[in-house]
Image (cartoon, rainbow, N blue to C red; front, side, top):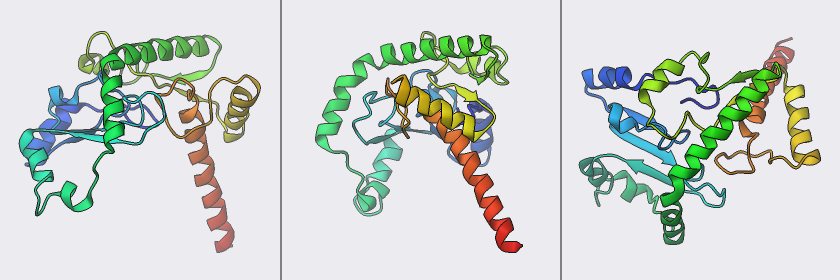
Length: 220
């Protein structure tokens, strides 16, 4: 599931294509842990930003690489392994904290998905443009339905397209500063950061537009 457009990839087809040419397929599953298990659909390597949904408290920085024993052993090779050469060793306290949060990850993910669908439906009913893979009109809804694990929904992220960066910024300011509903943040998976993607998507558009105007001005 892509960030921030929420396009769903056809994992089995991509895996078949990669394997046909002898390549490994790597999937970043940060957006939908437990919702989708890429390894069941052909992925050779699955990575997670543990800072997000897996942690759930927005208080740590960590990541995970999941693959076969052979692949992980290769990464840890004392002479040539990337992990040995680059040194991404997790802080033991962070690792311990994560082990305490994993047992209830399933409950949290299911509730994230339930609330995302609820908000998406309510906003749609009010005439807003909402993108959520759990809604039947999403272009890849049927594809995702063949990939998801039962009981975890369709993910805890939806997009709200307000049309302009100005309107998006105004909404975010109101939510954070007037209504105390969430924080304008660069993370996700924390119960108080529901507005990250709205802001991020429109901010990226605004920056691209500003860069184009700047380039045109220099050329002029």
